[in-house]
Image 1 (cartoon, helix red, strand yellow):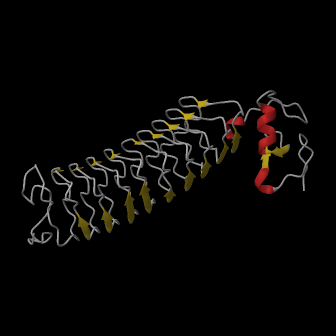
Image 2 (spheres, one colour):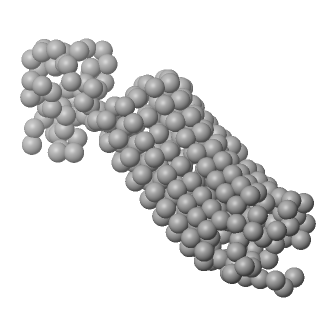
Image 3 (tube, helix red, strand yellow):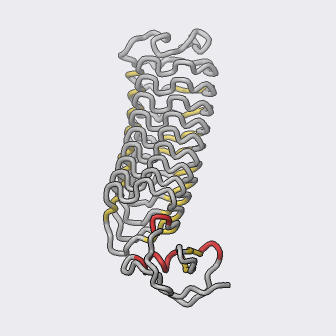
Length: 289
């Protein structure tokens, strides 16, 4: 087993980083070395292939990752974040298509817009209990993402946050969230189960549109508004119960929900009292009060 010339310890296969000169080191060791010196520790040949580094370790002192810091770096597979980090800015890891797993640090409060947009190999991410904001399109097109737990600290979940995360199969909306913004879960084709916290008041337009595997959703008792097209084309949705708190349902909110039966409109609607306006058909409706 080869030995790393920087730390003098053995290099296992999954830790190995080879430079153009063919000398091998631990991923972690050569990244730290190259942050100060751009030559190979053994032969002093100039390092020209750092863009191909697969494993990156961020400085222990940083609090913010800048806009587009690692934009479109398709070679990153793993990242070690420092505990000091509080903010990941816009498009910081956009297009990092080899990134597959992330554990975010305990002091992180903000994931900005498009931070992990189109990280198509990302399968899971651990969010800390300090997180307050997930920005617009933060995880859009993360097509391999299967599971994510939203922490109870989260208060803002912006539109398109999980747009077309086609492998995401379940989600729990914590009670700290009062609004699901437009297109947040649009096109999450594998989403089967959604649990929503009691304090949610608004589901905006297109929020769950084309969630074709969604079979059941329990709407919280404080919900007031369901936006236009919110559940359009949820063809597997077979049951929904409207709480009496709902006063507004947008146009075509349930259009093409062909599996729905025994729907009773809530009694306090102040919008059009016509089941067709909401996208229901006569087959969906139950006419008992």
